[in-house]
Every structure is written in structure tokens, then in C-alpha cells.
Amino acid sequence: MRKSDIMAPNATALAYEDVADVATYFSGQIRKPDALKDDSRVAWGESLFYSRMPSCAMCHGSAGRQGGLMMGRGMMGGGMGRGMGGMMGPGTANIPNLEGQHAAYIVDQLNRFTTGEREGEVMNRVATSLGEADTQAVAEFLSSTPR
Ligand code: HEC
Image 1 (tube, rainbow, N blue to C red):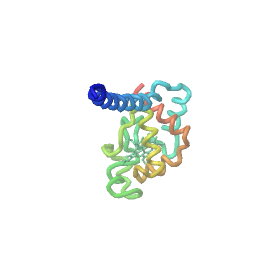
Image 2 (image 1 turned 135 degrees about the vertical axis):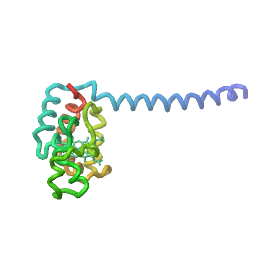
Image 3 (image 1 turned 180 degrees about the vertical axis):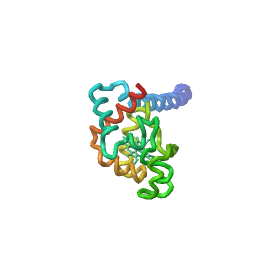
Image 4 (image 1 turned 120 degrees about the vertical axis):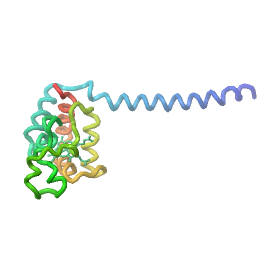
């Protein structure tokens, strides 16, 4: 009797500890790719970011610094094809800055765009056209910026 009175709260405490351990384990997993950056893959990701068509840089800028070449205010407001003014406008507010973002986060978001779990007219198409290796490379490049 006395034993179980003591052990019952301990078991509860242990269960909470296990939850914390699991959470720590997963947060460790999420950060891992940033520590394993591979130079040649980063270089490949960089070339993809700037020279793919349409290039990520056209919208996200030089790794996010000055996006908006294609997605100016006019285009976002009026949809694709309308208003060439948008091509030149600054309009960067609705384009996320990808600079320095964790590679694992970028890979995760691109995968969500690919499956359609995350909706984004442009990004659903862009992400679907990227292979798994390209996705990893471009993510590692972005997480390595600014340089
Ligand atoms: C035509 C413009 C355009 C191009 C080209 C483009 N993007 Fe995007 N991207 C966007 C917009 C707009 C969003 C925001 C979507 C939303 O509303 O969620 C976005 C979102 C993202 C996100 C999610 C960021 C976050 O903070 O969650 C990632 C990652 C991303 N883009 C990566 C890329 C990569 C890599 C490329 C090139 C292979 C690329 N994008 C090409 C316009 C573009």
C-alpha cells in the first residue's frame, strides 16, 4: 500500500519526463541538417537558386534580400499576367525572406507545397518541379546565407 502511494506520483513524473525526452529528441532531429552542410551541395543549391527558371531569386531576391522582380505589388494584387508595373515594383512584403532560414524548415515547407498541404499558387508548382536532392541543396544554400 505504502509503496504504491509513493510510486504513483513518481510514475506520473516519469511520464512527463519521457514526454520531455521525446520533445528534445525531435527538436534535435529538426536542427540536425544545419550542422551537416556539405560545401558542394551548397554550391549546387546556390546555382539552382539563381539560374533555375523561373529562378527563386526573381521572387525571393538574392537569398531574400531584394525580392520582387516578378512578384511586384501589381502582380500580387491583379494576378499573374496583369500589370507589368508589378514586374518592377518593390512589393516584397508578401514574399518571405529565406535568408538564414533553417534548411530543415525550408525542406519541410517545400515538401508541404509539393503535397498541397500548404497552398501557394506559385510555390505549389515550383516545389513540385524540384526533386528531393534539389530541394535539399537549395535549402542548405539558403541556410548558409548571408555569407
Ligand atoms: C514567382 C515567384 C516565386 C518564385 C519563382 C519562387 N517563389 Fe518561393 N515563394 C513565393 C511566394 C509568393 C511565397 C509565399 C507563399 C505563401 O503565401 O505562403 C513563397 C514561399 C516560399 C517558401 C516558404 C517560406 C516560409 O517562410 O515558409 C519557400 C521555402 C520558398 N518559397 C522557396 C522557393 C525556392 C527554393 C524557389 C526556387 C526553386 C522559389 N521559392 C521560387 C514566390 C516565389
